[in-house]
Image (cartoon, rainbow, N blue to C red; front, side, top):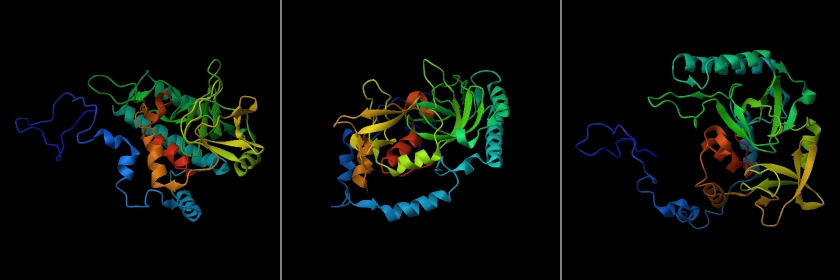
Length: 330
């Protein structure tokens, strides 16, 4: 990281400006190795506070009501209102107009000439998806693009631009997430994942398809009302798709250790070992659980907008809170 001048950490008296080059540090000042562990922070709490349940069913109901009334909060992909044509046209237009303004003002630079205008043509050619073909499971870790281009939009600097920070990458969708496909254009689909909305590239083999077959809303509701399992840490089963912390899967009622996973043909099963980071219920919302699950990700690579499948700050929050069955918007 680079340290910047601030009132709390003024430069040395002989300097009259911040250094012109970054000062590399592997650890922020005054941050000790002990602070890398949840136990350090939990020890500061009064007796009993660490394991006190902060949110229960009544509080979750109130939280859900408030989120439903908040713009940008999580929306259930099952809701057909997400595909309202007026809402979708407005959303697509506002996003494209905003990005055009950033490019024309020089605040963003295109990774490839005319990338944004090519994306505009893709958007203009997109067609609405019929409700019967709207709901799909995500089959692989999939980038979600703000507009349909993989050429990239970057913040310019004297040294060029950093391809690790593509301003067009909105999020990354995990295997097993439900999305509502709203529009399609050749090679692209405009989807709403509840926490984020954007475009996914419809990958072909050998990568494999990003979307599973269309699924009925009644089937999704049945899976939700049945037995489920919560993934508490990133886990890669042998020979299978990696399961990401925060995702949820249906499981077989007759065999709690067997998950029902989406597949290109509809559904597959996975029997998980006893030591897999899988819970048959969401975590109780306590300070201890929240700290422990968050600190478990410390040291993992950072990925802007989910670049290369890594988390950024907002996806960390999404994935951690989902383990408590709290759905947040990005």
